[in-house]
Length: 377
Image (cartoon, rainbow, N blue to C red; front, top):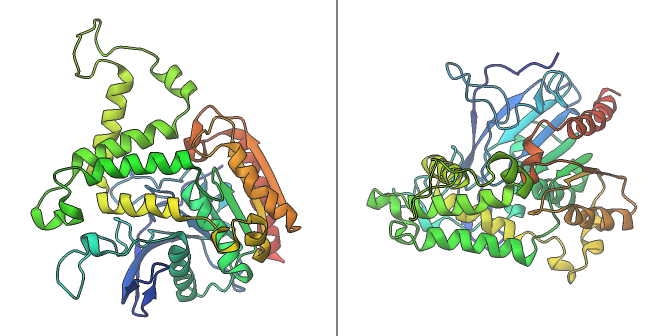
């Protein structure tokens, strides 16, 4: 029977070696917050890195002492007997650089000024994240990951691992992801960012010193994003045109259940997430394009990859549609990589990668069982 990893605790790694960003900016020192589950084997061959999506963090599985309701965001996937089986794997989850859950980010204190970094924190890319993750792997004594796994923006990081450090990853699992954003996706991100940038409480990104939070902008950004994460079928089945009361009020207050739900999600997100981090994360999404340095040729971009791949998409995901996943598969096949592709029938849209869809869970379990067998050899 599948179990939880139980009580977990976050750890912190400090790095004094400067990190040069793709933009040319340099971060002299930084810290990364992470959690681990399971045990690294004697050969160091059974480590798995979990890369989080836009709003994710290091708390992937289990719960904190005295707070059993605060389950990790992928607790259904990671644990003893689960598809990412902690009886077999040593699993690492981290909060990305620029995040707002403990790792160095815009809300952190800049040692040079004694004030929060705010708007001065460098714009970050997926390449920068993977570089910082590789340094964490070095610290943990992991020379090569058995697998790097991620959904959505996390999937992009997993792909970048196969390109930046092809010799350090055996398998890549890219779920509900894409090799680069479409113009429509960049447009959604820009609208979301503008909701934050134009909030009167934003103060050019230095709202910390003003003792305020651009709640309205962050709330609107999350509402817009949440619409794109759900499928039309889910919204229709869950809310339809249901009203909060028995009658129309003929005004602009909340009347429909879907409006109430979106505002609730927006308020909840704005209370726990940092607006500057949201800007950084969406820009990292926009900038990711492995083919950029190869004249737009994705086949050439993926010629560096050596890993085996599992690519998963979901039928109702219109934010990162199955076609986008097939755009990952094609250049890998062109370069004669071993690729498995699964298109899962799911009603949950982009959020499907977080759900307990039986076919999805079975595919993950079967693939990773084979990876575990490789680790045991």
